[in-house]
Length: 105
Image (tube, rainbow, N blue to C red; front, side, top):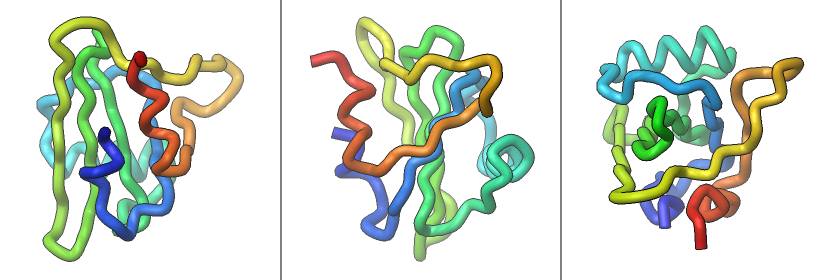
């Protein structure tokens, strides 16, 4: 479902596992990508963020048109994120095809 909205050039998806305020602007999102994931936003990388309740997902990426955001809000339920290991980083990196695992079937 979400993979249809990814830029065709996207080769990896970085999921930030800590909740954020999904109303953040693009400058703050780009800064979060650099400071936390230590990854410079480019056209090959898409970043996903969720709110505290995990019912809203924010996708941030850059492409030939510039910076883009896409928000998906669930009517009920929550997104299935990988479990956060306290000894590991606050993000995980997936292939774009793995995005469908974030939804309950």
